[in-house]
Length: 517
Image (cartoon, rainbow, N blue to C red; front, side, top):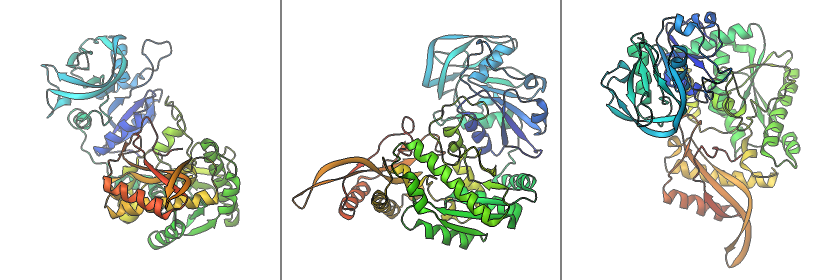
């Protein structure tokens, strides 16, 4: 994410860790501006940010491998404070004259970290022993000259090291929720070692984004894909603030929405956003395109391609259009593509990332691409959007198509809509809506035998899914009260004739994903 010159910033040097964006998120939670740069970024790119400190991310490589990525010279020449995390610690040890070797025992998961006698500002106001999350096979055998061990675990004598120049390394991951005091450790690095003041806020993000969008668009025309969710709403509001009447929002009803959703979206946007809105009912073409398609990846790609074709046709009616704006977030990106040298695996293609055709006639504007959902909500509130819009549960771009296992048909869509309506109705009645990240129904391709009124039935199996999460990168299944589950199940089998069995999904992410497809 590019930016104007900042009052203060911290740079994350990315070595391909799946957690690099999470590090940046934790820094921003401390109200310090943060950007990620690849490990081979030139100093000129970094210097423009006025950095107060540098964080070296983890990564999948071993520092002693041929061609392993190393820290650029400016990391050390800048004389700025440095925090190396996992592979970042090993990079520091390797490049500054220490020794890194394969560990005699790999260390994965929770372990207890013990501070040594020499205390560091990094651990200010923290206990002498604390639980941390390890994920490494290599370890530091010898520290570089001038460094001392600040903490250890049973398996890592040098779990934390540092010197008097503000260069520190952690073998564990403070950025993950599995390290309970991790955010405090990062905060201590930012405030006690980098001497940041914490001046970056959602309002600053709005101001910076508006400037970048104006610079990118200039006198061009923009269309924005609205879905009704918070992501596209915030993206539209940002772009509208930047370029005003140069923006036209397009809401495509792909026939895969929930019950009553199309009209609800139109009413909400006309009431709150006060911008040009074009409504397109493309139900027939989407359902025709999905006919006979059962593979989830093919569904996503078909929907993504069809969206773009609809936008191209609408753009032709509007005259010249130069840009397509989307509410893409970082969890969409990390699951769809390996970006900026990131070595994480492709999990599934999101319709607005991996599902986009290569021969588009638009340039993309994605102002939220490197934000997490909770950050987007803060930006939405800073823009003055109503809470009913900002705190709406996420709904996937491919809609109900990926909540129907197997072929998408009109009949199966109506069955799922009825079930989903009941799930949401009961979740709201129990005042659980804001506590949950997502809650919904899934129509499986399994049928089972049942008995209703002394008659044999052979109906659909419906799965109910409800999860809690901070950012969708990980999620836990929600411990819904039994009485709520009972009401949902009873209503579905009584009100939806095609369904005779309901199950509750108790799988977390990982190993599962939030959506079934």
